[in-house]
Length: 66
Image (tube, rainbow, N blue to C red; front, side, top):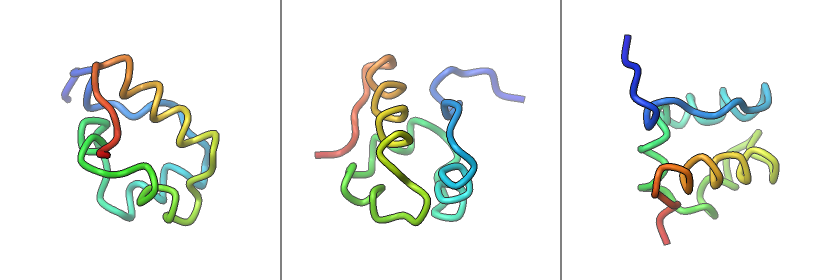
């Protein structure tokens, strides 16, 4: 089992986790390759989930793709 902080997604709502998984995003670092607007298009990704992901990325020195 990997223990890297950058592979762990933050705690998200029930709709947000499957939305990310179905799009193939299983690690936080992958989200640095995706724009925030693209994530918002996923069914189940609301403003709270986007904010939690933005914060988690920022804590690791990462951000959504511009």
